[in-house]
Amino acid sequence: MMMNYSLSHMAEQVLAARNSLKPIRIRGGGSKNFYGNPETELKDGAVALDMTSLQGIVTYEPSELVLTAMAGTPISEIKAVLAENNQTMPFDSPEFSDQATLGGCVAAGLSGPNSFVAGPIRHHVLGTQMLDAEGRVLTFGGEVMKNVAGYDIPRLLTGSLGIFGAIVRVSIKVMPIMRCDQTLQFDMTETQALDFCKGIRARALPIKCVAWLPNAEGKNGTFSIRLAGAEPAVIHAAKVLGGQLLDAEVAKQWWHDFKEQQFQFFAHRPLWRLAVAANTPTLNLGPTAFDLAGEVRWLASNIAPQAVRDAATLARGHATLFKREHSDQCPADGVFQPMSPNIYQIVKRLKHEFDPHGLFNPGRLVLGL
Figure 1 (cartoon, rainbow, N blue to C red):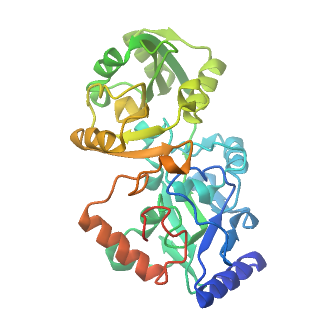
Figure 2 (figure 1 turned 180 degrees about the vertical axis):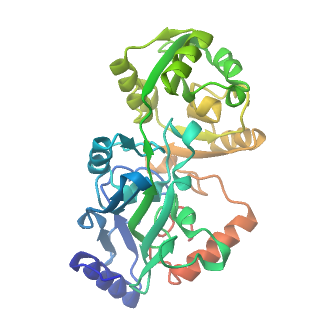
């Protein structure tokens, strides 16, 4: 592709960093700087690559449900354009700031409550363009370049925190907004809510999101089920499930505040995110909220990192130290649960293929890479 001035300038920055072996820190809107291992300090000539200069929707075909935009495009701008066509980004990524960008959301790989049915963000990334350590723009996905060595590169870049290179353009699949959307709430303990969730995916009901948030006393909590789809199916499901039907605007605000972690529960540090198998019972590790019908647990606890990871492993999952108050709260082996030796070797090989000198966001995803 032809590079615009901003992208050409970035390529020159990358080449200069490569020639002097200086690390490159990829900067987006800054909304998720807290996430991942501590960032490389901008000292000793380290390069800051500002992605926010790459903005704009490149193509959007509402009838094809595909949108392509530059990585620095604000999520708010994309949402506004989609809303004009009654469409949305189904993966529902948390933004944590008005400055959140498309590239940052893809690089972080985080998905919101809607992903319970729609699937995580990596399932909706159709193609990517990446600036590599040679200053080249590589295209992956269905547009031009075949995926390398059998790997689905767009999915590998999703959640990679920029360690392979700088994502400069993204194509995503979008979806229509459901015509009927209702939220039911129940007052339940965590155990009662988890019991309610058992087999919930198998039920022939238009359930879109399922989450539970403890109350201030930490005993009972608010169990929320979001229904979306054809109006007759939603109305029938609401009758079957029961609970309190929320006003549409109140429900919209509740799901927004849960996704964006605006509730007081999420202010605790450290805050852990555990991905566990469906039907995993209460973990009893400390104050907990859950999303995706219990497959994601948010743990607000000072419990030792290894104890959290052991519990996640027993539940056939993994744990991430999502937010921390100070850098000294970061475990010696990083905020992410260590990869298996086989997975680590794959990531290491890919890092070497795309970034042989280890310049891009060193250590952000895996310490030492």
